[in-house]
Length: 260
Ligand code: GLU
Image (cartoon, rainbow, N blue to C red; front, side, top):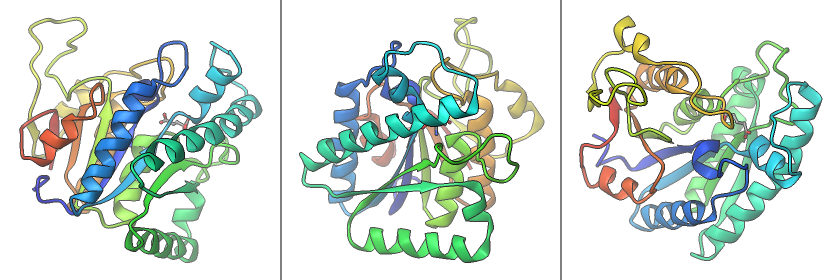
């Protein structure tokens, strides 16, 4: 039951955090930080998985085209991650909520020793009442190196949900759930409120990537839901347009799509 979840992982994507021009959507980010702090204040433990390093780096350097070269993306991520954390620290700080940066790569969670170490670190941070703010370590994770790269933060958020033994994973995105056909093309498209089992038919409903600023799209969300569900963790895909929806979700309202 999502409403009863005590430890929750919330993932926010680049398209929810930034405007089309790549600059930070401060109103949304501020609301997100306030709501997450409030959820934490109400007795839950929150882990935030955030994208936006490359997008914010592009915005900061005034670049509008996402580069394809690895070193360019990594340099942008190095600039953007710094800015992103600065903003989280500042905005959460307004509500007296401490945050900590955790940057992960695929190999770290695959090797038992480093995985164990990461689990311990998360446990310690959560016990201290700190919200870990997690991203992939884009500056060093290389696309071409198999195993080093999660590839997308939806997958990363599901892995983090496993690492912290979360009770629920919530993915905030630019659409309010999974639809039975593409709502951008078909006005009759209907939202599917609950997916008990992820079948090939469900996978077929996911199109490609959603925006040119993020990397996800519904396919990676379904993949994340599968990873989370395999550990018995429900996964909710809801609209990140107004982070206040998190209150509704944890009050038990049927919004978005709940997998599992
Ligand atoms: N880690 C990437 C970033 O922060 C985003 C990956 C994703 O959007 O899935 O830019």
